[in-house]
Amino acid sequence: MTETRADNVTWLTQEAYDRLKNELEHLSGPGRIEIAQKIEAAREEGDLRENGGYHAAKEEQGKIEGRILQLQAILENARVGEAPRTEGVVGPGMTVTISFEGDDEEVTFLLASREEVGAPIDVYSPKSPLGAAINGKKVGEKATYNLPNGRGMTVEILDATPYGAG
Image (cartoon, rainbow, N blue to C red; front, side, top):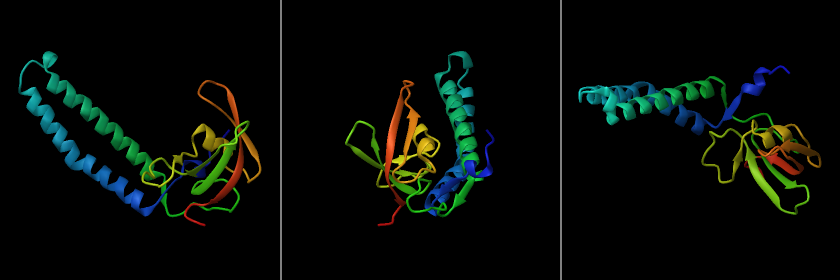
């Protein structure tokens, strides 16, 4: 299976893009300077083998560098604006309502990047097992995906509308 360029695209609102870009700029600049100063201050305390402050600062540095790489990857593949959407077809940027086979309960969520925090409803990633299984399906179709325990779960798509519409 080959992955197309479109599979790597992360659709973000302008607000989410700006927030992530600001976080990256802070971590890459002042954030790195702050942690370097903490490491230097802890290093001056002496023996590094028994220096809890030094080890904590180095661990924090690792987390910062990891987040910088994550943000760079997200922003590199980000497109600001609305994903192309077709009413009744599940895709990123759609509010989706599903029902689980054998259960009358309906679940409604936004299929979008996890970086779209702040949405008033739950957000499921298109790359999650459920998101990947329903992506591209039409209202009325069923999809099966694997739960963490390996069991298959079947859902029926009841509704798919552009987020914020209706």
